[in-house]
Length: 224
Image (cartoon, rainbow, N blue to C red; front, top):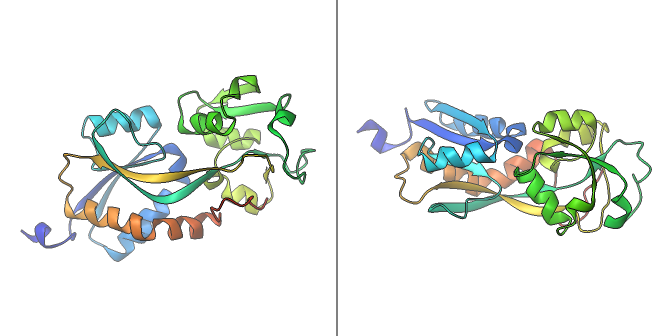
């Protein structure tokens, strides 16, 4: 009965796509700071594992970029998610404006693995021409990619941009603007704590992510 009166004492079961683990813990911290009795059960997964969490009812809420199309889910966008192309600060294209995609044909790319949200976003940004790129390596870890100094989403490289260890290339058609979604099964009766967290994401998620990453998600070219 106490749990029905509010979110005090509830357990928040939430799973997030791996690209979100750069800011998501701080979102959770902001939420739990206001609701000190909430217990957390956080899981970080790649896309395939996250969809498994949803389909097998292993989590109350999932946070991802591309909601499933073949599953009966409720999908609510709560924040923009820009994807950019980055390189070492001494790359010759840094500072060049509106670089055409064709100019990247011979550049060696390091990408996330096929089927990941980042791969799908790159494929979308390159309008089906991703196969024409010189893909030097596919890696399952965004952190490893950053250390190899190219590729990823703006929300995963905010610290490297601020410290000028990476630079955003001004590529025609980029950033690719997608959205973060809070997702749950349509037939899922969410506990009060999950409903409260969903409301928190929808009302404050965008502002919180911007404050955490210092990335202003607009259609304008991001500052390197």
